[in-house]
Image (cartoon, rainbow, N blue to C red; front, side, top):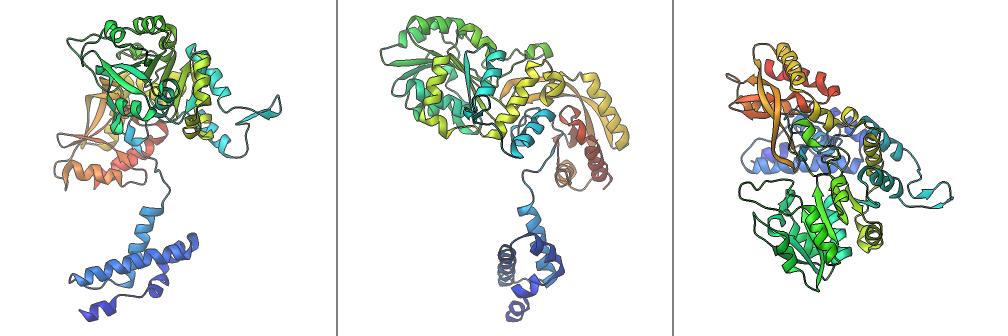
Length: 456
């Protein structure tokens, strides 16, 4: 055993190995030394367990492999072949080329982020975005923060801190990541008052709950689940009328923020910010990276005096959006203003793509892969906490895995280890590839990876 300990190479000996020359050129020497020591410590633990001491080659190669895993650029671009358009784990909405260019322009040097070029003095980072949101939604003013959860928190903190907020029991919901409306209310300093039942709430339920302590009525769009059957929910107009009769604001947490009518694509109609404004809602909150198709952002639109109240609140600084997200959001909103969202925004290209186009693409890929692949009908989904339960027709490349070591799970794992990882779904030991969510510029890489993995 002692001989095995003595056989473990020293730090200096490993550092002198040719495999680590490039690492030492790229990274601080102390960082590489620490990485070598980690591997040597692991070797000592292995020897203590009865293993033979690794060679210098083995330790150097382990350091190099671990450095690639830990220090490579992040996040890594992946190919989304799952058919889930707004895949939360894969970064939700991919950006348009114009939005990507806007980020690069904003990052490459100084900009007029908070500088009024005409007046030659300090300006606001919200002015340009607010102008576009006003035009697109009919709101009097708008404010942007870092995500929709922050938008709701800021709204409640500024409007109803220390007061009651009335919400339907069926809308006091939890969304992704354990984010719960009741928890947000508590963090804002407001007091939650639930009314109605899980499946049925009426305007009178809100009316009977209003007291001198009430600060606002809150409507929450159930964007990530459905309640079906014996149900009732008051219309926005009913809630607006009630709130304004009692001198209260109506706040609307809309969630996904579709500016195009999803019903036009054969999907259930998703409530739209412009509809909230037309109904008379005082403030509406929605996301930038869901059905809007832009970067992560929380957009607040509504009455001018209320937006100003939120902008003055100390929390607004804490949840402020960064300049690169603002640049991408501005470019995204311009697509809607120009009437080109379906042609330029990737998620709307995916949603609007006809199933015949998906079939042609699937057949092209299956032919390239040979007998191991076939084309089958399937379903794509919007995902990302939008349009729950909604699916629409697509065509899939179905890859058989009989006779392959490890089956479908092993093939999916091998695809994830490609230079550009490929994420697929598995059904009945078949690997399924949905062309709907594969970006055009990634098609050749996808096909090369599929050929390599299926040939193995």
